[in-house]
Amino acid sequence: MVETEYLEAQVDKFVFKVKRGCYYTEEGIWMQVENGAGRVGVSDFLQQKSGDVAFANLPELGSTLKQGQGMGSIETIKADVTISSPISGVVQETNRELEIKPELINEDPYGEGWLVLIEMSDFESDRKNLLTAEEYLAVMKSQAEEEAKKR
Image (tube, rainbow, N blue to C red):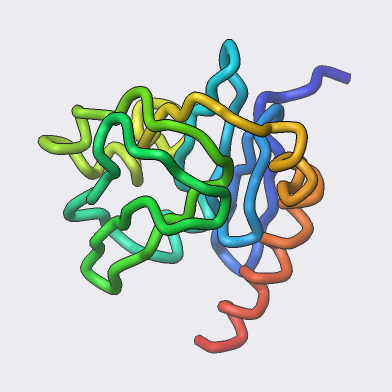
């Protein structure tokens, strides 16, 4: 059996993807380790639940972040969604493409729609508060089922 790049869960008529190899917060922020840094973005479930992104408010380069601290937000037609940092560290890079194409967050949340790259300061400690893709899939599915009941 070939292992795919994504785990999937279907709730109601919606299909949600969870990228393997990433770590997640329960709030739906993903982080992928890349050469001592963490690339951060919004999960497929969070972007679908939030709606079409109109604007991404990202932290300044060089900003020092603590795990769980608000680092920015995405503005959608439905709501303003606060983005908390999944890891502690210093912002090395922000996705400048989002300034002109914020919809990349909806179109490709695990790829071109990434938010920031953070130089990690204490990943061993931060990792204890993060979920694996498999763990997040279960949490996300439960959250999606709760959302479906509200409709």
